[in-house]
Length: 504
Image (cartoon, rainbow, N blue to C red; front, side):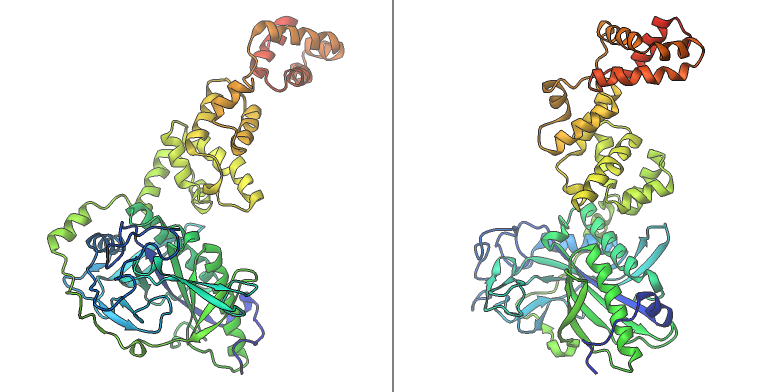
């Protein structure tokens, strides 16, 4: 039976009858100045085939040299993931035909990784903690990039030819491999995405990578298998390669669970293979039959000596680790006075860093949260964009809130100012000044507007003088309209009461 054309099983039904087990391999490109084994610059978006040296291309007679900063970054990642750091480790040659690695092998680590036996706690949206065990974190080099030309989709299927850019070949990577992640049930997609998000946040905190998934700085290979029950042997896994967004990770897991359940329901056999994710419909398709380790014919890299980080250096790096995301969130929760739900919402929306930077720029935590989780979150949803991609900075939001706090503008005007900031009109203070958007607080101007409203609304005046002070809103409305919403509403109310001789 073909594994490609089996009917999908509803996800909830599939997880009712099968126990999904995950395994995730995350590759992170390290933000070193040069590549893993040579002096070529490690830069993004350079002209094709310009950030290379003879070593990058694996030309005959060239010799690699290990990048010390890459080793340092790898150790920091291992320490942050509670791993043991090897006293000595080595590189191996992974034999496989890579069209974008000219030497036809990848320099990686096999049986002696630099970090091993770790764990990381992953917090889900409702606050549940899932501990993910880390088998290993090892160093290796990235491959180049293939661009497929002539087809309709940009994929190799249907292309007439391919172009190869070797700029990325040799960029330092750390690959982090989990042990099997069991007992996730219906939450398997969420667990997978939350785990990768946790790693992304750790990479950024360590400052070892920009960790921008849209650039491929962080990529996940998502392994999924099904078994009939939690005490049954592990099922055959598939590995969906190079998934580079949290949403795509969730969709990959959901699709593979539904697809594999369909195969098993029909008494078919799940094939151990690599697969490709398709963004347009959330499906996966077959790549190649998955090789086992022996198929790669690993052997020690003869041109590189073992890496033996001293215990003193490792401890120095451990002591210099920054505050990690989990500890930071707990600290901010106490400092800001958010509820657990408010903090989780901010984290899930990708707003935590933005809120913190806004607070650092001078706003209160609650006002920063109000803007990023309110008006700006709504704008991001309308544009189907991430919050951090919006054309507004935390400093601008803090300045906007400062104008409100100083009573130079009100909330209504602030929203208008924010719209102009998002359009690129400048900083909030500049916009308020150049466009005359400050609130009107001049008593002579407001008194004139109040007297006109009183003269035009005698029935409302009668109600107010009769004791129905709440009717004052019927006078404030026309005054705000006459001043384009720029009147100081609080001062307007005071002047109305003073003019009518009524106690508020």
